[in-house]
Length: 530
Image 1 (tube, one colour):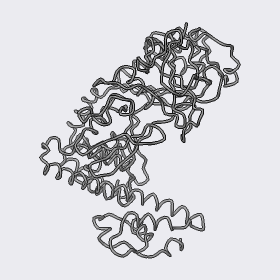
Image 2 (cartoon, helix red, strand yellow):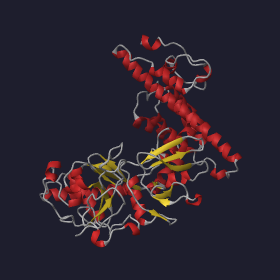
Image 3 (spheres, helix red, strand yellow):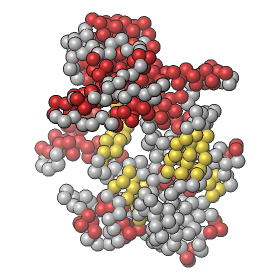
């Protein structure tokens, strides 16, 4: 470790104040930083850290890995302190500006999230964690600062004590630190994993206030929910948070069905049979697609010429080209089938074997950038066609680092500030981000970029940019001179909308019956012939 120790120097005493439980590991981290005249900044620490060479031997490398892990915990503790100080300063500024007490603090969590490159929802949780650590759980904060806890385990401790009063929470914090040695790394739980720490925290919380813990369990039924998350390889993970009796009953019913099917000669695995039965019971159809809208965006070459350019499934992300063709053409997926099998398939009616209606909408892209083109409107609210266009273009919430589903179609420059109802001045946002954007001090505007780009400015003057993802068939740097048209294929929905103004629509005899690249100018959608 001579290379590390050779840097010498130490932080001023003021920089390490407030760390009563810091062990030798935290002190050793300080020696990594070269002395800097005056006030030491985070940038100075980053530069000094970058100058540290990799240790010459294996033991030294492991020491460095551990010390860097301690440094990450120390940084998380410092972030918590700064977040709380920022929240207090913002509340003071808002109070001085006459903001009502119940509205003070609005937008703080979003600014913390943007600074940490996290979603606004996670920003709120991080700010709540910081407040709990600094005001009610100083021993947990000290353990985080010293590297005995990482940020995730500190979060678990705070979460499990959320039902307690501030007094009882402080008592649990003291018990974990002093009585059992849980937080010092020298007690019975030294080296324990997440489950062991959770068990210790729950036991301590129950000893302090059993009624609050029981009440939280009784109220948990209000948190029942169903969530959907993308999974690799064009799969999705559907989860349900249910009361334990209902969850066990659902699982038992699916298990019973799968066992019966397999005993009758069904060659599917037990898990696959359970999953298929779940889909059929909920949707009413074996395929799972009935009267809902599923949007696939792809190039015309991918759909009609077996091109390998991947498609995009709204709400999921990028999917392989052959999977998109199989989904649109209603072909049965077989284990081991790949792009070659799909490419060699004969031409098929778009609805053959699928049991659903398939509509194709033609979307034109601008040459050179690949940006989708759409109509404008004089209305206050976005018309249905333009709303769907924003859904296809933006896919998820446009606030940086937020990938929540789109719930609101927002005027970037507000309507009451003469913002037009256009595709350029429109963006898709989740509900929370739309409310945050309307908080005093936040502003947004469209700016020039490779594709549709929005600049968001926060009350502190920081700016963040969000650029729409390229549609299938275009690269991140632009589409080039021969930008193809994108195809929006919609399963099981009504007649397609049109994005072209009425004056620009072609006469019925001139409309294409099947989507094809006919130019990169005015945007128009056409209805396929069945």
